[in-house]
Image 1 (spheres, rainbow, N blue to C red):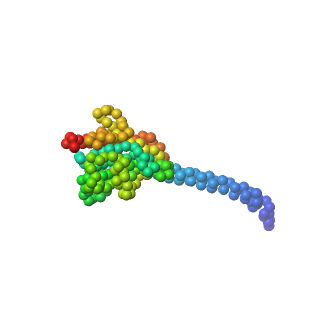
Image 2 (spheres, rainbow, N blue to C red; image 1 turned 120 degrees about the vertical axis):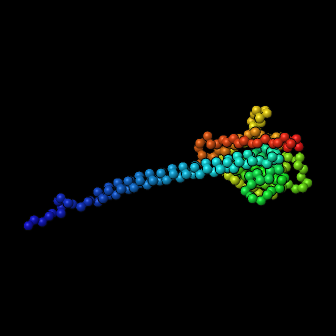
Image 3 (cartoon, helix red, strand yellow; image 1 turned 60 degrees about the vertical axis):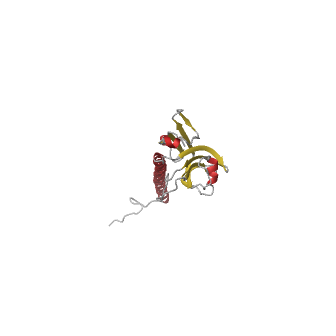
Length: 225
């Protein structure tokens, strides 16, 4: 009867071999973790970009629908300006009940709506904001200065719709002059088109940065006021 010598044939792993095996396993696990981590980051970035694009698309759709359904009496002026140290592009809408409203209640016929593209207090980005209010009785309907109307509604807080834009731009198309303008100073007429440029770090597709919105003309009897 022969005994099996454990020193031959089926010997156990040495300490060095165990360490090598553990090292290889660590490398494999680290590689798998890196691949999974990279994949998760990519998914999160894609999802964030898609969510941001949806946010911008929804904003543009709201504005497009609002402009298309402007009340016939609504007048518009718009200009870039700086007030209280804040750089902004302000669009003023007078006699604009229901414009961009989320309320079901009927609003006053002389309602003023301010739509503003405002730089953050830190100066890092831009926000799209709005406010709405009824002017006091003594306020003349012929008074249509953007700075004065901003001051008039200073106590009304801004409602932020969308923020965190790296750059914004607003232009107005004058069909009679056949040119784009950076401001709109004629309340008796409306621009034919309004171009919005909304640049976000989270959306890299330059084709989605600009949108052109159609604005219906005022009626002739309103233009003669």
